[in-house]
Amino acid sequence: MTDTATQIQDTISANDVVLYMKGTKEMPQCGFSSRVAGVLNYMGVDFADVNVLADDAVRQGIKDFSDWPTVPQLYVKGEFVGGCDIITEMTLSGELDTLFETNNVGYDKEAADKIREANG
Image (cartoon, rainbow, N blue to C red; front, side, top):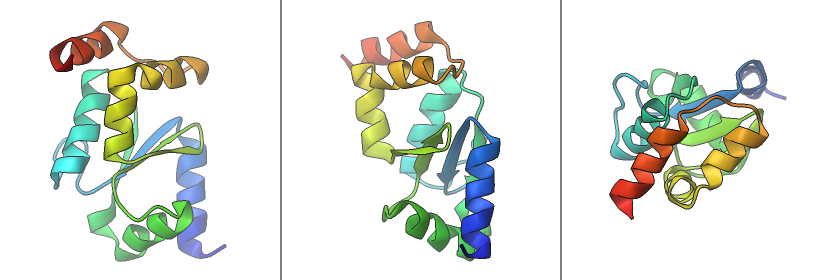
């Protein structure tokens, strides 16, 4: 494993929920990252954010690590979940709630319901 791959593995192993994104959860730097971070923030999920714009090696490394061509990328309990479209779909279908519940990740169920209500 390369140093970058080891760094990525260490990060996703040390945190229950990790979002590799452009920017930070407080200040996303692209619409897709903003959408996923916004959903997680609104649902009260405690997650680590990794700004791929701060390190070119990580920016390419995360794509190689997951074999997924785009950012953002969400990991839950060390497993790659998906990017913006997948997370949006999972949020609206309730699958993201189930994933969090199955993995004992805290989130605000009422907030998740409000997202679905607003987009129903």
